[in-house]
Length: 289
Image 1 (cartoon, rainbow, N blue to C red):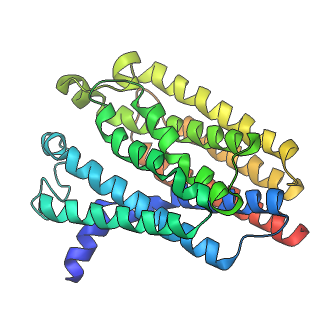
Image 2: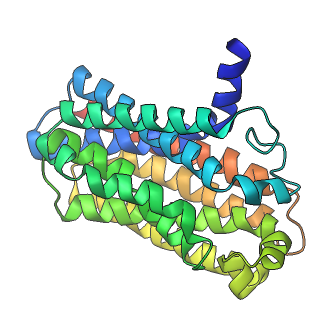
């Protein structure tokens, strides 16, 4: 049983939750302080955590199920749970249904708008897995899907969507799009051979890395705009300076002719970035409020 649980956790890359979860909490923190004038309750934080675990688990499991045949052909992904025979398709489907159930339950326990907008979130979580079959904009679609985390955190405690929430949403969407383009560079040869769509396949690796930089410049601008739109102060600014430094470093260590440090750029730098921005935002709001 414990081995099976370990396989499931590996399949959904539970450690990658560090990408979106801090921003979901940040959306709840900033939104609650700005709209409600106080920090979110522990109950709200708990249900946001349940929603995030459910949403990400469902999305990753469904992606593995939909891409099983493709993963089996790709040397990089051939050892994933389904193509390697560690999990059956039926088991993964049941896991997906249960995970979506957690998401639905959590949404019902939060502000009403969270539940009303749930069909959009579920659609995006399902739709993304098919996009690389027909459009090189798949990275942008993933960006908008992951960015539902901070927007969802905001809506979960405020029951509203305003321009600040939208700018935060676009900021995280551009951040995700940028690092997903970088990550996709390692599958350039395989995707091109199999007729799959991506920005690296469409524009080549060198141009794709420049496009990723462009998205991350927009990310930096978005983070800075939040200073003027919220009551965040110098502590938050310090966090953003560090985050921008991480983005710069990420692009310095990945080159078109050298992708050997791509995993460091993808996981370490982006995981650290989300934690840094959330931590400094938390300190800013809790200490100075």
